[in-house]
Amino acid sequence: MKIEGAHAVVTGASRGLGTALARALQDAGATVALVARESPELHEVAHQLAATAYPTDLTNPAQVRGLLDRIEAVRAVDILVNNAGTDMIGPFDELTADQLAFILALNVSAPAELQRQAVPRMLARGAGHVVNIASYAGVVAAPHLATYAATRAFTIHHTANLAFEYAHTPIGFTKVELGEIHDTGLFDNAQKDPLYAEMVTRAGRFRIARILTKDEIAAKVVSAIINNRSSVRLPRRMSPFGVLPDIPRILSGKAAAQLRRRAQPSDHGTYRARC
Image (cartoon, rainbow, N blue to C red; front, side, top):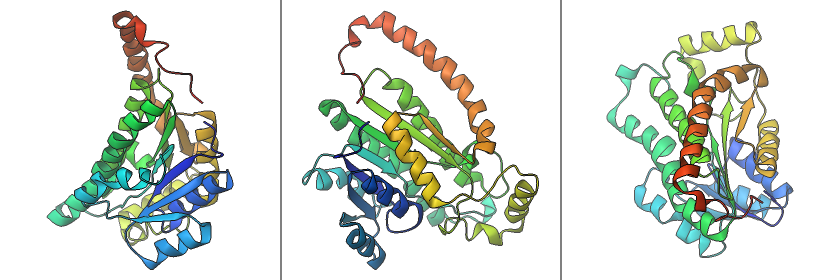
């Protein structure tokens, strides 16, 4: 998809990876809308990028349901980047009801609802791309990550299924599976958990993983949008963890595509080729 001249929405844009993604999209020629909780940081980033800020509590269903209406009252959304998320790392039996509701709302409900709003609009306009930021945690069993990992598994699997469901349309979907990222704050609490910290240390010692930078991730995401890639996996040395679960998705997706062709042969040609 052509990014120059597009209108991109980035959630979790007030700091860390979200800010890097917004800056990279702007550098590629997009106009950017920034979504995050109300904060001085959000408005400072908007000022730096000459972007528009849309303060939104993504754990509040009422605010999420009206978000794209607010943004599209100004301009249609061409690219949606669901980046906002939280970790909540620790023993499951120590998780409170409020914490559980919070992580499910932010990591699962909000991005799913924003896609529900965005996809029909993109289909009607004949172009669009959705990027969902996830983690390798969604395909492994790491200590004290049960709920966080499950939310990331949802993101990965949901994106993969949507990519197959809309493969015959001009809408692209990219899932982004990541290891640890430098200076984002997401896993700051995780490093205080001895089991998780030891796992990360061992992964580094055996060169299974490395710490990523925000800018390298942002550059790969921009490239994936331009080239309509279904996956971004960083670091690449960990990519087998993401590729292996994709095998049954690919096989079943191809079978579903065959069924669609047989059942609805007139579907093809309904949509223009992807931009």
